[in-house]
Length: 154
Ligand code: FES
Image (cartoon, rainbow, N blue to C red; front, side, top):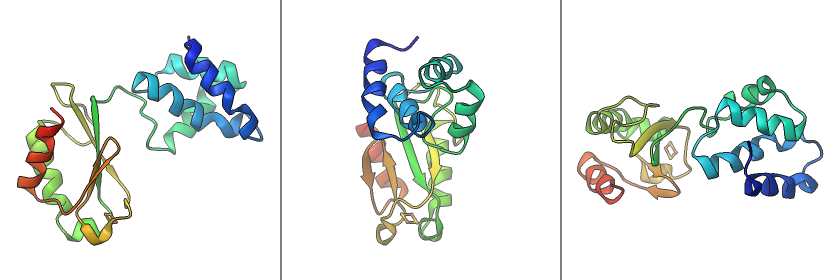
């Protein structure tokens, strides 16, 4: 069931979209902001409000990789794997990060603190390799710097 707050925030967006379908991604983002991820049951509740089916919403979520359909860590790490970052060492950083967290890309760390996801260019190619943790951009990464940054989020 949507909370009163979630429902209010979604309904406040109605005037800004030509159709309820057009609002669906933002509706899922609103629910995710409050819950951390979007469950099947949450899709049903959003669908009821917007007049859409779970499969309609699930299909849209599948094309938008920032809607999390399973629980994620307290902090989400977005590691850029586009060309500039790739050339500047993203694969080594990815290996270092997954070893450090004891998990694979896309999975939540055992302590529940982090989920690391690959993402396309973050627009800071001149400071590659680059990642975001939540809303914070981190530039010119290397393994030692990455370790120090992670400590700040523990
Ligand atoms: S390729 Fe990584 S920020 Fe552009």
